Image (cartoon, rainbow, N blue to C red; front, side):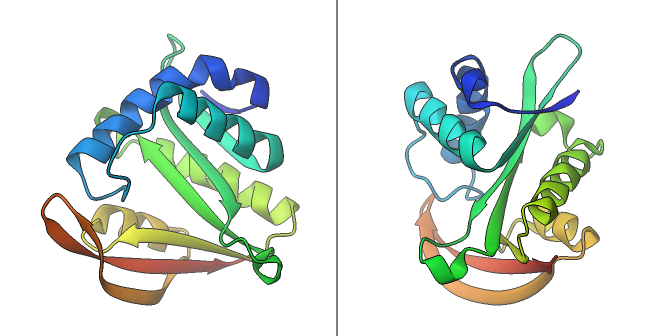
Length: 165
């Protein structure tokens, strides 16, 4: 089941989200964070984003959180206000079952309702699954940055993809 997150849910959701995210931080270059955020930090992030913008979770029939997606402003400067960046993470066991598509569809719809003009997906270039996933939603490659991140003893390229709303 996919539901929109309220700020009050952050304390309940943070442990599960932090646990899944920790796996990505520690084992992949999908996230460029080098240290996984604590549960308290994840709670703060969920509360802040869900209070101001759009944040969705996917829970299985037992109530376990297995994925989430949200959007937030792409950059801090005011002129960038009409542009948001999406973020989506799924427990590795549920990838490829359409859940990510349902989550992102909700986020895109909310961004349209908020008057967002453009969405950006910042993706590690080796993450071809995410690149193809975003292409299916109409995102197009907008930029390519060579070796801008260093993680897991290697440099990583980054692709920005853009969807005009």
